[in-house]
Image (cartoon, rainbow over all chains, first blue to last red; front, side):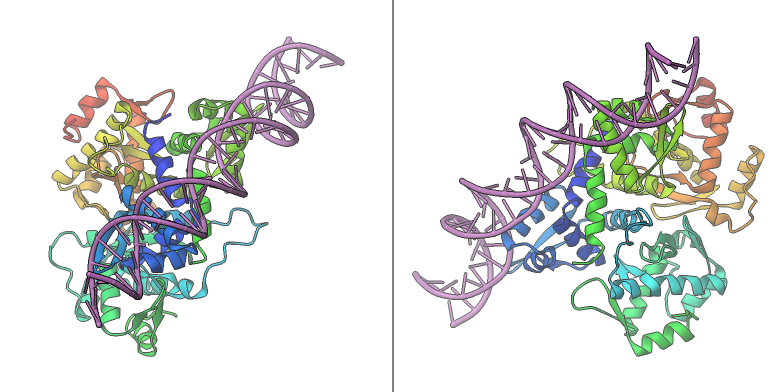
Length: 229
Length: 229
DNA sequence: TGAACACTTCGACTGCAATCGAAGCGTTGC
DNA sequence: GCAACGCTTCGATTGCAGTCGAAGTGTTCA
């Protein structure tokens, strides 16, 4: 057996508890959360949640920060979010057509953040629209911003030139687990999400990772991006 | 709690057993394996392995194919390999400097296949060399083959033009869990691995995912690619 | 047809991980 | 300095996942 396998099993065991999985999923938007809120999400008592959180910190999936009497938890690195996204992509696969497919929360499916970029129907629609307009090449494995795409984002006030490297490296393809089609991640994806928050096109749901598309946002995504949403 | 969380926990529980983790790791090179071989790898009796394999097939992580009296198991989709690679990247993170870092099998670390492309020191060295020669842009998030890279691979007899799409989509960055630096994946990565097998630069280890670099291979990777290995 | 082989199913046993009540610790604010 | 609050630690209980021996199924080959 490969020596890495026990480490892999250990890591998986950490995610294998529904409470901890819920906590990790909740933290995927990158914002820190207090222990009590995470206990509520996991559906356990504070002392049980505390035990779960201690294990997650110990294995360096989370980091914790004291803020007064509270302790705020967040994902230790973006790598963890990326890993979870990959797992969700597989978890969302219909195990067998017999069983009903995993039900997905309607709001999450509509629009959410995936650490720092847009996901769900909104994320996929934006990526799809940019692709159709020749601003983006995108498939399941990779993504590339074209010159037209750079110019388009530039017009919106997004400057991706620094540090100036390949335009390809700005952009990563991320397979959306709810839509099962790629959306736009990487620096370009993060910049678009930032812009959308700044211009109040989307608002974070007070609890949870889903975001609400404002009326102005709906119009903007349709007219500016040409997204069918 | 998000509705996807229980599905995520279920999936993780499937990987959380050291035996199953070993089986999955073993199958990451894409080649099918018989149940008895997988039982040996998992370090359990055939009946226990059979039970593990049934669970993995039921949840659609593996698919099985009868070949005479044997049953050959393989990963159900490349998505599963990609997910495991992502998990290993996180699993290989030093949980805390106190504990010794996960020991990694020396052969695996040297050179292995990651589903369809090269990984380990060899994979990283090849990617690094191509990057230095301006044949490739690569970072943790994305990768892009340059015109020079296309020409270089073309001279080696690798034709990536069909189906002609963006040169970007040929190429994916994959963070190497043992080296913690990116190596080359995607269609370009797979083509290079294929070529290396064809020309007998590398040979599969009869058991396990590690590959052996032949003397001719070492010379070829050094002179043709300029890899420091 | 029957022997050899690969694998699976069944049933019973075992150990560990998750849980919560109770109690303890640390910070804040009056 | 003490009360209130958020969180953690400790200890005891519980249930389920993993294990293997024994027996069963299915395939191949002579």
